[in-house]
Image 1 (tube, rainbow, N blue to C red):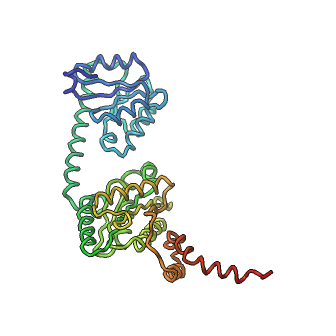
Image 2: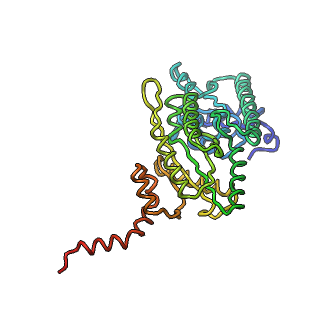
Image 3: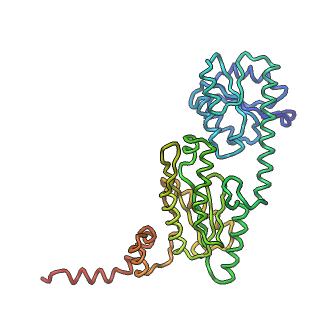
Length: 359
């Protein structure tokens, strides 16, 4: 446990499998920083996730369980902005320039050697702490803005704040008029891998194109909003059956999108999660959002490019199902198959008996 004095000092996580190296770094820095240690990359990753007070990560490259490259990659690909923006200083030995360049490409901020003197090491770590504080201030300002702005800066669609406003409005309208509202959430599948493949700026541009594609197909009274990362939502004043048809079309539209990048075509799919006020028994938007997020996570865990909706689905007539099939919209009928087959069971049984030869 840190002593009382260390509680006010910037916390630095040192990850190195050499006890001697950790002791040397601690000796140099302990007067100016609160030093915590781990002996391998996996333990370091766990500690970084559990301790929000860590300002800077110092890591060796060669370690058991998870090496420095793997740890650095996890940090820079983290969905947690606190972790993703943590400055990383590599504790290097006599590695050649190619090794260091590779670490820089993965997101390393600086290097110290195992022989760096105290004054230089304190100066480098102090600069990293200053960078971390600036990043935290920017994140705090962005969080404050997200609670007030109504337009998402990256995609131009609505913000999460706007979705909450619109959601509360639609749910209140439904309550007054005995109607129902449905929240449709979708997330682009494999976005982290896409990010690594084509670069963050291009991936963000692609996300904006998909957002515009979906937004252009909404009615004027409906608003698409981004919830962070490649995740979006829209609240529909519609019953579950109608919303399922919309959601399936949305999923198919995204899968069919033709996006060219450097003479190759990128295939993008989306996971979809649905929550409905009547089926899920709630009139509170936050509760509806929590239910929808759970189903969205389930769709992604099942491999993506699929829809997870409430189990109870409003009945679809046989005539409506046949009309959808005739227009090539089989996916919209799929969620209702069990109910439709039960409805048709007496007719099917009659046909079976009529076609069975008598003894």
